[in-house]
Image (cartoon, rainbow, N blue to C red; front, side, top):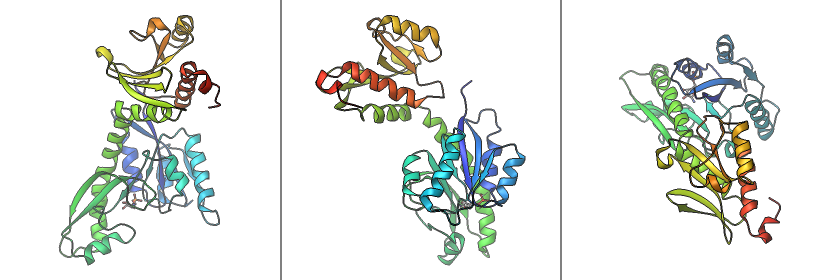
Length: 313
Ligand code: GRF
């Protein structure tokens, strides 16, 4: 069975969205699990609920700690629990640029309005003051500017005559609890899909000196300018159903050894197999990206012209 994506939830208060994420994750086909709930408010009620459900919790008061230092504390905790995606759920703390950059594309937030309308605080007051007939909630990716990242999903909620900020907030909450788990599950499934995997491989491969990309027999290939190909992204090649990264081993002996030692991770690719290339599975649901980075660097070095291969990378 594919391992579930490890989600860390950050809260500052009640945590009803956190609860929705946790309870939705109990469905056998839910692609994520909540492995940590962390807070900048040690007595946030949501922490008690999470702990009662057996989820590790972490709290650290932010008062007196610089924003960047505080985020490092939270980040260290996320890393310690192997978190892959961060879900903000009523986390009332602006994030440092470093934190946002590190988790780019892997950090999402829920906001109680139909963004881009009514960013910031006191949203329901603003909706009523503006005489809106409908409002709603939005889940979006987190970027450096507040409540502004790409929108992943929205649910509309009607404004009723006589609504107060409290009555409206209550109905928007119902909608939030439906929306957040659904959007998170979709994002997680996509994050393990070929587009996201290729993006990640590409950013690592093209970070190597003089690396460039071109299609080769229908697969994205990465080569060293003036040198040879050092990696291919292979997806369902000839309908084998496999998603993997092809890199150069030192020869067929090493290739055979790798496959024998770890047959779940390594495979012998068609066509390039006889030339000593080895396939590394990217569809196991649990990719070790530093291992992929090491292989790319090694394969790059074996393919680069001498003057480049001497460069420290
Ligand atoms: C929600 O309305 C969410 O949209 C906003 O903060 C509120 C958190 O509520 N970001 P809860 O703590 O999840 O109940």
